[in-house]
Image (cartoon, rainbow, N blue to C red):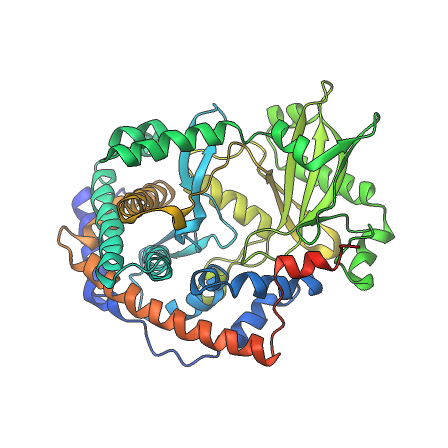
Length: 470
């Protein structure tokens, strides 16, 4: 096939404005739907006793509610025209799904770090998820309407400017581009932003597998056992399990070691030869169930503790991969394995990915992906940020999203041409984000009423932990 010229590609990007004007992105659309029905739909198939905990974590604020409702926004986005500029998108790029972690070369980078919803979709869906999260968070922090709008303008303007730069880059340049903590410190505009980056680097350096071992497990002279800490961490067949008797059947039928051996064998087939060799130095010690995040609560997530011949630990997380909400509402290509979808999407969008990423089938035909549990990982505590730090963070998120989209799609030229050089696209997204934040608050009120009336059961972590105290 003949390669398009740069001028032809720019023309294609501008042509997308014909069926999706930049000003049209203000629209939230006619939203006649019941948020509770969509929530119930996304809770189907989860661990039954953990669904109330999911709702409990979501009930804290409109922002935690927003984090748990990617399905609602995907539904809503499908009701308005899109640009048709499609690519692998994160699908859940709200501002808490960015974070720091170590590359295989032990360099600290900041990047997107949650890919459960990754799929092929319009590039602006990611930006709309991000910008609405900035406004919902700003309101939660009692910031003014003007401050919230400024955060969106900052993020989208940075996305536009970076995308224009990436449109000038060669393929390899894009592939090698990394947003390291050192680079963030260099580009930080204020001393306070630089201090935050340096503090983050120090904190990340302490978040290792060895530190985790001391906190999570105990040694009986022979092998390591992870300590139960219900509801967040428990052995599926132990006294503190939150599985119903029906749900534990899959584990009882064949002892967990056998189940893990079968999954492990499949997982190894998805790894390169050198990674398989590396994993051969570790032996499994224990496996527990871990409750993670807000939106993921109730999905099956296991933590496996392995140690090498020196007794040094490696914690791997086996996380259930369910169909992407983007794929449910956008005509994404069909996938054979949801775990593979997550892993491949992560590798495409991230600048550098975990060396232990892989996938396998679990009990009852469920799909899982594997990754390290914690390797110098770091997330921003935005509630402690002042307006200046939040603005720096919004700018960083815009930069990261532009880099991820440019690398994964190879379509920086088209996207940059579509957005253009004016503020029109950013202003439209600022209007969208404010309107959608209003919608989130209305949905949150409906959700709280459903919890109070008993239509949904919501329980806090503290409340559930009390069940286990003697």
